[in-house]
Length: 193
Image 1 (tube, rainbow, N blue to C red):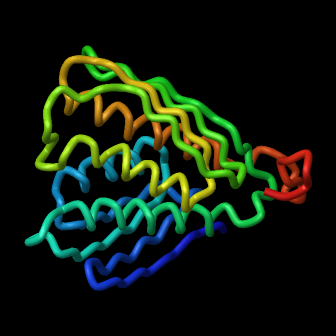
Image 2: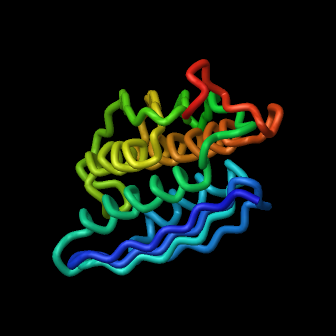
C-alpha cells in the first residue's frame, strides 16, 4: 500500500500529514482554519484519498503561514506516496460544477511541478482566508509534489468557485494516482518520474 507521511516543524507552524491514495478516503483534518478544513475535506472525499492532517500555526499573527505550510507538507506527502510512480495512471482531469460555478483541473503527476491558475475571485476574503492565498496554496502543493496542474474556474459566488476547484483537484489527483498499468511499469518515456 502506498502512503505518504510528513511532519514539518518551523518557528511558525507544526504540521503532520498522512496521505493514502489507495485507501477508502477516510478524512481527519484539523488545521485551526475551518474553511481550509472544509476545502481539504472536499478534496480528499471526492478524490477518495485518505487524508489525516493536523496543523498548529501562528494564527494570532496571520493564517498565511498555516495555509502555505499545509500546501507544502501535503505536496511532500503526495510526492512520497507517488514514489517512483510504478503502475500509476499519471495524467487525469476533472470538471466540477457547483451551482453557477465551474472548475476544470488537468494534472500530470510526472515529477515536474508547475501551476497555471486561471480565474478570479470577487471578494478579498473567502471563509476568512485571503482569496489570493488559494493560488499560493496550490503553487506550494504542486511544487513540492512534482505535479503540473492547470486550474481554471469561473462563476459568481466565491465559495462555490473555490469549492469546485478543490473538488476537481481531488478527483483528478485521485484518478491520476490510480494504479492502472503493469505494477512494474514507470509511466514515462524517460523511464523515471
